[in-house]
Length: 216
Image (cartoon, rainbow, N blue to C red; front, side, top):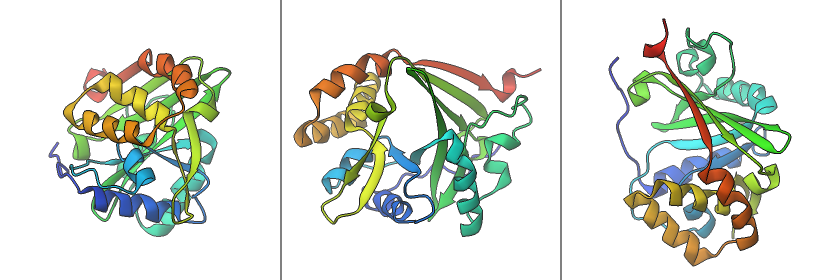
């Protein structure tokens, strides 16, 4: 399939979309921004680098409300919904992706199971080059260490991955852009007790992957 999205976006453009979403009454308490944009939203600084899509995590039971919100806003397209994939035979929710101001925004469900968290996600051929379903399992991590609410200098409260989870994930990836984000996180400072708890869970995360081409 033809890939229709290969663009990158400025830090300012990405932050504007995230802040706009966090101000939406219907979903603001149900969505948590993830990935490399997190430290730059919290610090208010500009990364000076380009960013790709926006990752948002959502508790599984709140995905219905999120989909309803996206439909109301005119963002939702059924072909960008993991539930519409023919090879998603057991109809497990792996999320939905939309375009907001031209930027792909991925809403991915997570589920707390005892001391573990299951985080699901997916890839769309038109946006990423292939169709696939992904399931990540983080062992021995509390939801309070995984996501939290932060208050920005202007008073806006946003939900996001904890900076400690972002730091552990960035250390694991160790790409050039991750080093830029890590420097900002270290400049801001972290809770080292929380970091010591989440680092093993993030770095030992198990990922299961089902690609459309592997189906028979």
